[in-house]
Length: 160
Image (cartoon, rainbow, N blue to C red):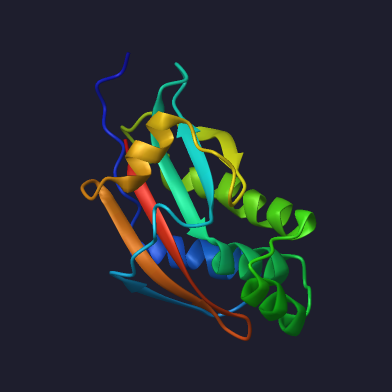
């Protein structure tokens, strides 16, 4: 097993990835707080030995807005879904693809290679280790994110 550590991605890198994929200006402010017990889209990332090393979670509104923006779907419909607490399958799949590409942010020189292992839809039961890591306060960064024209949500990047 590798003893190398995985660094938290730089805020600018996360912002640049979102803006590049969504084709929209995104505002990122460190210090937003993702509700670990809320309805979140949660992605887990593993190393080459299948050890979980990181997770990324977006709350339901940000999952909806991300999925809509990358799919070129209308903001009004996305805002309606977010206010109703609904994440349609197409939006979820689109947002999960953004989370898949986020694995690239962990793959820096000298750190273990990480890849997306799984993603869990909002409201889906999380494995105990995933839930515990999502709830921890250290080794993480939380952002308040606004996808221009769509809306605001929360994102958390957690190292395990």
